[in-house]
Image (tube, rainbow, N blue to C red; front, side):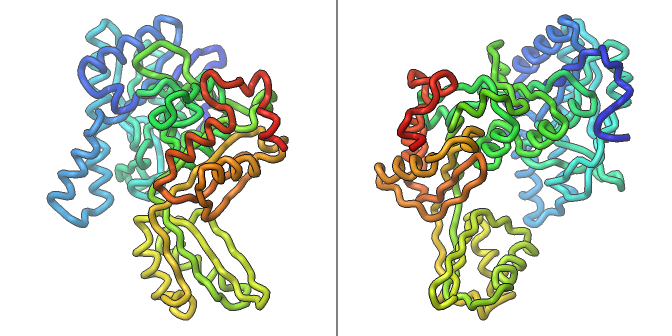
Length: 432
């Protein structure tokens, strides 16, 4: 048992396809998916299909659970929510057979996707694909229920929202598949959300690192952990639409030409909040004293900024999900009331984080300057800034989120009809 199988013949051609809830949302769409699967098999591929629950089904099931119990046990919620994918897998197998193919559906525990016991957010530990290989050898299309696994005690676990993406990429890694196709209701990865920026452009190729940043910064095309698996095991991921045959976006290893693109995409998150604690004592342990109770409570802190005044006092600001502010304040009052008092703390809600991402930032100067100039031109105040080698994020008031995304997208020349940075490079003023 392990993640990467060594017993698959090197000359075989395995293709993993994943279909989201919209793609399998009706019997007509299931028939269309079956047709696509069989076409891939006729083209010489051994096909493994991973499916999500039908659109809206997981929410319906969880809604029933909460009607019966306001504080349900997470183990039972996983047991309930995992059934949506089971239905989709069985239905798709039947649709394939109805079109003259051979198919078999397998659940997470039948494939043997072993996870830890963190219900609702389980992480994959290993994948045993012997059962999949045996069915492929018989000429069957193997349909796997996504989103689910099993822990060492035999409990059904789920991988979190979007977890079917992770199932698909993990299976593709274990099978040494040629590629993992992620079919969804969009045509690929765009330079910005097309619902916000009408002239957003579809990217032909994007690096794993850029996609990781985009997934963590608000882009909803791929689940973060699926990209992590893809990068670790070098699985080419093809994001494409289940409603057309057009080429989508390939998520692959970084290529030399990608460095020519200073900014590849703009994205934004909602529902951010900021807590600022002032007049902190000159003490090397003060940051850990504040962050420890938050970590113990499972509260994820994002952007952290500290400033020191001439008298040695510090001001610490950090962002977190707006939904966690009440819990965070309670944890801090309980654990360090001497630091977290009403006269030295300030909370701001209704914030967003807008980000620009591109591997070209490593080798081009002036990107931050250009970003601040664009936001200043729109009179958008920046609360906090966070950077990495390939991204810059600014925390701003939520009401300016869409304006900021459109302005940055325009300012960095990312739209259709603007100069293509891949061919001609970014505008000179972007780099100086």
